[in-house]
Length: 276
Image (cartoon, rainbow, N blue to C red):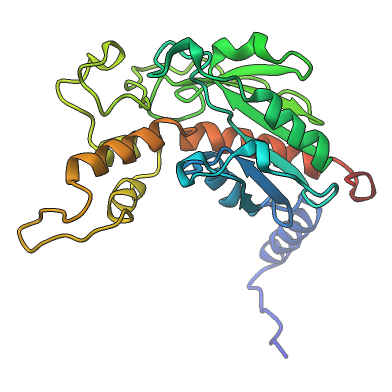
């Protein structure tokens, strides 16, 4: 049993009472607004977008990944199992920086198919701004990494299903860093000519807001490092290409957190009995 607190004056006692009253009447501080949400992440890659949702408490399940030989068209989903679905279909069909050019397949319909099959409460799809005309059934908005508090001028379009659109952040003063692209590992590509040399995975990870991820991606590939620092198996150059490629395909941390916070804010304002 705690001992009663002794106050030296009535003024101190009154202040303590006001502080307790203010604490009781203040709204609860939600540090993990997505706690308890089971989220399916499609086209994950390194899943930077999913990591932003995990940091706010969501349990994220990764869907099929092309890098592992898996195909989204083979994926089937049981209705009602997931609270939300997130992800970004490949942007090559819409992006000017794409290696594969305009002949790439548009897989946005596959994302929509999984949402329709799984019947979640909400969904968020992301892609390059130019993909806006590829899917107009859901409202969309273009958000900026820099304006959301990030390092780069990367802009992405986000479609929202079952949720209202967020209000874009105000224009932030200052100079943003260059965006990390999936092609930033190749200094010979026109879109990457601003780099004096190919972008290093460590720097790409820092710019994307996940500073520890660059080294983890490089070290996670098959092979080991010799005493001299050379990689056995997959070469150091190839490791850097892979790491920068998957980092460049991801959503920067600040941008992902901005979207995840918006989702959490919307869900906490919906009564519990109306969420399913």
